[in-house]
Length: 312
Image (cartoon, rainbow, N blue to C red):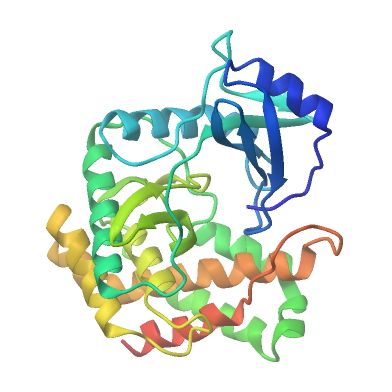
């Protein structure tokens, strides 16, 4: 989440009036994240999130994301649906951007998860995968292995401005993944970005899974590998917490049992997860506008995580 586009108050008031959710009381930009412009919106009828889609989110993909969230919500998963206005439209045009008014879910994202919280979050991911077994839509993963090659090429020599030798290390890792990627594992629609800040919790209970805008059809177990890399290390990526890792995988396995071949491929999946986020963070680090209300994230935190999976 971030704020790239400023929305005039008068336009917000006109937008909210189309939904029958009361009058606008306040709207505050949300700075976390790097993908879209987001506002926390309070009205006399409740609280909502207004998202304006920018950068990597293609407007043509919005029907997929909306259908995915509607399907998961109907299956009892704690996800936020896009609301429809008086004319039944879920996608609006706000300040020149496609936008949705989205349900607000209670809870907070944890910065230092406990094993109990990791177990609950892993179970929530497993339950989501169970619910998606009968979801019949697909979306290609633009940030899979071929996308990592393309992004590394776009970053080019600039990678070495982040850390000396980073470009060569990325090239070596891409070559290794080309030869070892477990492409025959079962596939599903996945979240693909279930970091702690995309899981809302009250205590040890998951109350929300949010930010599905990287969701795609991909290796199902890669979703768990992404989550493992995001949840189970110190923020700088230097220290792995085995108790968190064990709890996360146990929670997932209880809800959606892992196959033996998925377990065997987990180190390679973890390496792929780390390279994906190293590269997208590197691109954002090099290209985020200086005047954007956005928090840039350290690419090298995922290089250190990658070292852990490479040793495995």
